[in-house]
Image (tube, rainbow, N blue to C red; front, side, top):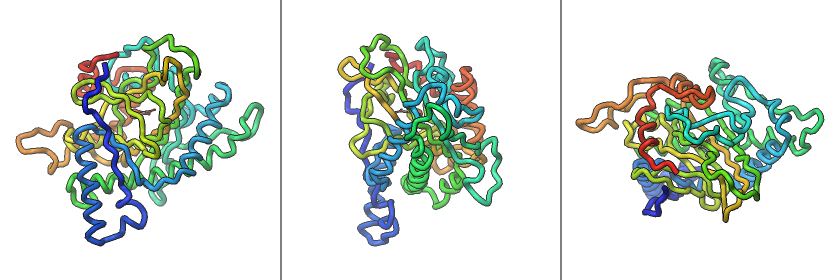
Length: 365
Ligand SMILES: O=C(O)CCC(=O)C(=O)O
Ligand SMILES: [Fe+2]
C-alpha cells in the first residue's frame, strides 16, 4: 500500500559545493555551504533519498548517457549477451537476478526481476599508482563494434558511458565532502574511505514491452533492496516505477524533478552512522501510466568506497547510551555478501536481518 502522507524526497541545490563556487571563502558562500549541509543531514536522517540540483552535470552529458543506453539495449538479446562476464561487469539478461534475495528475504513475486542491465566499473588501472587486485577492480567488457547485427549507433557507447562515469565519480566525491560537513566529522574521515572507491555504473532497461496492457501487476522490475555502498547517484526517466519505503512502512512513488539527479544512501553510510542516516529500502514496480506500460531507463552509479576500508559505526556518531549496531567489516566483504544473494539467487544470510525485517513489516502490494 502507498499513502499520500507528507512523504517527500527533498530537493537540494548543491551548487555552492560545485566548481569554482566551492573555493569561494566569502562569508556568504560559507553560509550557503552550511545550509546545504543542514538540508542534506535532515534528508539523510528522515528519508535516505534526496534530489540534487546544481550538480554541474551538463544536459549534453545526460543526453550522451541516454544515447548510449538506447544504442546498446535496442540490440538483439544474443548480441547483448556477447558482453556477459563472470564479474560484476557487462550484460545481465532479464529475469536473471532477484534483488530481494540480497536482503535475506525469500523471493515473493514468483519470478525474478524483469530488468536487464549493463555494468562498467573502476578497473585496476583506474587509480594509478595503486596496485589493486583485478578480482575486485574488475576488467570491463565492452561490446565489439564489428560483426553482423551490431547497431551502427554503438560507436558512441563507450565514450558516452565513460563521460558519464567520470562526471558522476566526481559528483559522488563532492557529496562525500558534503556528508563530512553534515555529520560534523573531521576533514578526511570519509574522504579517506573513497580515494580508490569500487565504483560501478549500472545502466538499466525495464523490459516490459511498451504500450502493452498490464496483465501481471505483481511483476517486479527490481525487487526490494538497499544499496550496498556509501551512496548511489541515480539518473532515471521521469516515468513512475521507483518506490521508496518510508519510516511508517508504506511505499511511495518517486519521480525525479526535471534536471535533478536522485541520490540515496547505501548500507555503508547506515553502518558508519549507526543507522542515524538511512540506507532506505527501494524497489521498481512495472512502469505503468494509464494502464499501459511505458519505457523506463535508469543509470545507477554505486559509489561503494575503498575495498579495504573498514566500516563500523564512527564513535562520534554513536549516541550516549546506544550500542554500535554493526561489527567491523570491509567494504569488499559487505558487497560480496550482498551480491551472492542477488546474483546466485540464494538468500543472503549475512547480517541483513534488520533490513529483511523492515521489508516483511511493510505492506507488500
Ligand atoms: O531503476 C531505478 O530507478 C532504481 C535502480 C536501483 O535501485 C538499483 O540499481 O540499485
Ligand atoms: Fe538500488
